[in-house]
Image (cartoon, rainbow, N blue to C red):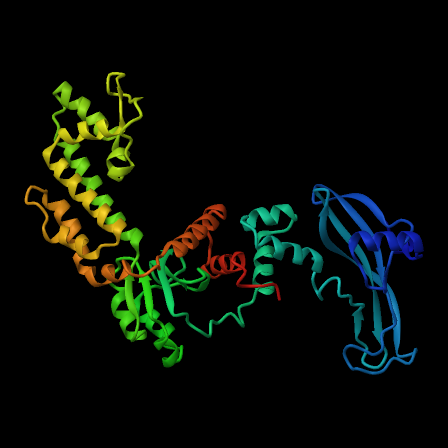
Length: 442
């Protein structure tokens, strides 16, 4: 370890080299011939750069008296270890000897200042900025802390100070909105968080920690009434709680049900029917157990659209005695196992065809004319769609869907999974907005 007397003389050549390496442009900082040493700090080998910070201040920081050469006197410099960006995966420290000054007028002492490190801080501004840049990436905050040899709390402080939301308040609403919810953090007031975006661009507008109606109404009512009147369409899932809120805050908006959730409702209903058909087979009968395994294994073939099944290519399907059969023959055999499954399959395919053609009348005619041979759970799941007849019918004529917003929800889940969860909703919200480029470094 070096002392001040060992480094107080400036070496012009080495000073320029070290400043270029550390990206220091502050003239009052200089380096001597012994500018760098290898030392063990906190049980780790560390690159230690020795520097001196000194200059002649113009006035006292406390009383403001002008320095005429006799008011302020220099004291022995005091060293402080400033953490730098690691070099080649090795921790790096700038041991900076800061000049101390004493004021004869007010009898206060103070240290020399530099832009390279904030007052009363021991982490360089360059290191803080590097952490802030890494916060834009899909990487956990703990991994960032390990990469730069700092604590997790340091990364949190950088997140809070470099990405402040003082100006992060949306002041306009698009004509088409996408709304959805996702699972937040434990400190959220509600069970689910709320997210909404622009249907045209897919860009997130804002993320709220509570999806309850009175919270959403209070949030959207801060927008001017004329601006809320501009909203023409709101795309959502089949969550009945959102409809009253939408009609209250967006008086001219029409509700659309997302296509994905409509198909999901139909597909789940048919898949549950397949499971019920499987469970009705007798376990003591060898032939019925073979059929059970076939229904269990080839569920994807049953979910396919009929026109997408293979009719020509012969393949070997396990459980079919190593025979060469087509995919359509596999489906035909599965449907012979249970007549109720056959009827449910015909209804399911009818829905797929009507949905592909965007024929809303044909779609709801199938629901209104369901065969009596269908089981009650299947019929009930399909008739549930009639509650959203108007919203589904309108969605067939509009090009908007929640696909872009579902992609954002998937991104949020990825960020949460990589970080192994977040302690606070605000940190999760900031990470999402930063990753999407909606918050920039101040």
